Amino acid sequence: MSTWGKLAGASAGYFIGGIIGAVVGAVAGHYVIDKEDEDVAFAIALIALSAKMSRADGDFSEKELMAFNEILSEVPKNELNNVIKIYKLAQQDIAGYEAYAEQISKLFEGKFEVLENVLDGLFHIAKSDGPVNESEVIFLENVAGIFGFSSAEFARIRASHMA
Image (cartoon, rainbow, N blue to C red):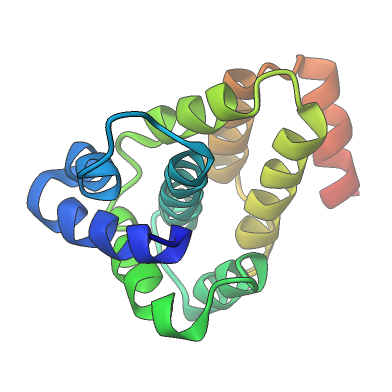
């Protein structure tokens, strides 16, 4: 089963049981987590974390959804509806974003260039509807901390987006 096919199962599972349902839906029928399952776990976590970022300022805008679409440009067109379903469910509030950040952090432990790229994407979403506000900065700083970035490293990343 392809990564994006598994995402369809994860989407269905998310509707039934939240993130746990998504993971169960993605790996149903598998006894061992393989590379493809890790890709699905990463995709779900990135989609949800991006959606939570779009809510960090209290409001959601279509510009944030467009910015998210720019980040996930590799999604096959036939799976876009599943991605949008997960995104819209996750963007209802910011609760639980830490779990998604921890999942991404574990998948890419020690790969700071990948984790910084995720932060860059989150900054892209935060900036899409205007200046990054204080609640968005707090969200991004918390995610950076979960990823293992120091305060100085976060300040550098922040400066590259908010110079």
